[in-house]
Image (tube, rainbow, N blue to C red; front, side):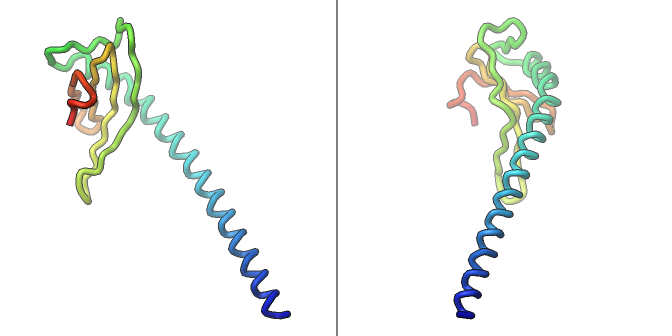
Length: 115
């Protein structure tokens, strides 16, 4: 009888622990989404200006463009210690990656051609 009580108590503790982990995971995910939205909003104007002023054979026209969209903030882990961030905009089929750390824009005509 004691063994059964111990097993039931352990099961209840495991279920409660998994529930607590799920709750904290959900809360952290909500905070990360909020932080990402804030950073994207903060970087957006800067990215548009840098992309429109970037020198390229294919001009990037966000203002006055017929088809514009924001892909958003992306990050790529280049190696163990280096993470590269980019904010990607698309205007009339022309992609522009803006690096918010270096404050530099690079224009590419196709998503598949970009590095």
